[in-house]
Length: 571
Image (tube, rainbow, N blue to C red; front, side):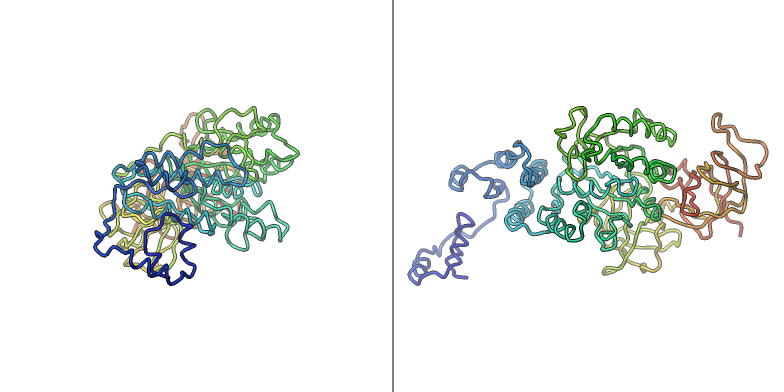
């Protein structure tokens, strides 16, 4: 590269021209023009915000007027007001404005990180490099609230497609990557599946079009940071779905409005019912029901069909325990076209509420205590330059270099590094999805369902406990000695009902005086359960997230329950 390009350039175009081999005369001119006694360059931390070239009026104008940070941010966010452009350019501009908002929140210039990231983004938009964009975290910016959203519903209701569309609309997946997916999907005659490929990443999931594992991704709005948990809808993979729902604060039940599809999902063998019930058991308080595929020719945004789906669902959701007035919100949408996800749908004049993403943003904050004891149920673990565990911090806060205890094996471990949604941090609060690199324990010694806690307040562990259980569906009777699979927080363990203590009257809550000899469907009882191995658990009263569970057998959910009391082991 010739030295003439060392001089400060006014614009990128000049640099490209400068790369051309320069004649000798220009070289000598450049050398004579060098000022040897120039002052050393000192970076100005409070300089005006960097504005990408394609958003400036002209380089000369902006150079002439030293614009303040505020002006720069206004200049950038101007394009957002323009009507949405079909091919996604408007979304790109919107992404920039989010960055700006993050920067505005931080007075006094936040170091070179924003400028660098903005420059990188300009390059990305010029060349369209297919890399996921990670919004840089500013050191002083207030932390956005973390919310975990799980997408649940019947097979092929469109969960992954909606997830992919949201990531595209919020700028987490760029257009080039989606075009590549679209081409690949067309080759396999699956052109409507391309959006779901943003979340269904392995080959098997893409070939069959079925999600198997819980897909993870994240996106940000003005006030909140969302983690998408894309749960599988197929009934063979319900255990994976329970693991996903146990990490969620908020569930999105996706149902298909297409004729015939809604009915199969909702009838006895469908997954719509089971998923809604499991989400409630996993501790999800708020449910958003997305009536998807409204653009389908059989539906064509018809209000009658929307109301019909709603009428069938409400009584069932009420029975599960959701309050239709407060906990449930219905909205129509189309995952494939993206209608009513970010912008209101033109065809849908009868729906007056907010679209999906703005609605998520407007939800009230969750009250979480960072003062509580540290509890982090482990979802997954792997080896990567040490032992890495994944999980959602249920309560308390964790910081780097902190000493923790892995229960139930009582291994003392040290936190080497913390990643919250793939962004490294020094400390994390409740509700965040973390990847933690640990020292002092091998990957083989950890199982999903183990819990990280502090030595001062260890979580309870044991094998025997008393619980109140509701039998949801079981053909025959259940007697002491019955075996099932217990799903509690992220732990899966075999369990046996060793004794039935009493029946509970559903309406009055009265307990029977005599011990029942068996329980059958729709009855509530208090029973003593014993697991095959030691597990970590808390009573429902002390710690709801770790005190509720489901019992499953033969691929069906049989009962849901809550832990009332832990029974100490007799030596």
